[in-house]
Picture 1 (cartoon, one colour):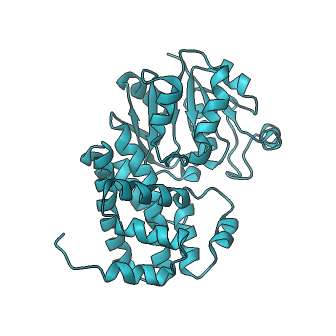
Picture 2 (spheres, helix red, strand yellow; picture 1 turned 30 degrees about the horizontal axis):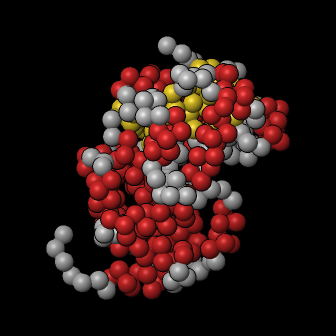
Length: 331
């Protein structure tokens, strides 16, 4: 079994996974699109921009050359933002062999058409290509700091899930395997939308009661959409569903939650994005989730109101009032 992984995306999450796998004895090549940033990583032997103070293991090397990535390993782990996911694969494809296996820790939909990311992989590389998603309640700094963490690895081929699990599992990092790629993907995308909503509620000064109700009803929305798209209900009660939702809705390490907090406090959307200075996946996911709900006729009121705040200029307080004014119903 190969112990070499080419990891694409030198942000906080990609760097954390690279450090984790290297600590587990894998040979790691970490790719980033910005040559100046990669040169700095090579010089510092740490990612001072995103994970300062955590030194790279010796078996972790970096590059900005996609040809080098293609020659390095037949296992890819992609951590690029969802808006760049398809473009990275298109650019990388000419450099890859026919034996490639593709995993990703990206959470979101394909922004051009709202497809799930496994559909993008299948279109570019064929349905028989081993494919897997890694997801769960994971803040990058805690993983890099070797704090106890658990994730789900869902793959279209069980052997590939076990292979990735063997590479990443160990010490304080626990992996569970699954065959429900769709459910894991939907959970990872929708939870970011709900984290923005939770942040807005807290920014408006509402309490723990509000947050608990929002998380619970938000989970219900996630399940409705996920099952409609082909996911399994049980997946959403696990790490990649409820676990990740709780994490991102309740802790300020979540960029999506912090963004929502800023909106609830009255800040402009663009100012809030600039203040955070990193990718906020829930912004695009809100639009894509809302459009999917409209397409399939699925009731997702929290998602709908979040979309209207982000894309139609609805005041956050009005969005909350709209939710509370909905017709009474049984649970």
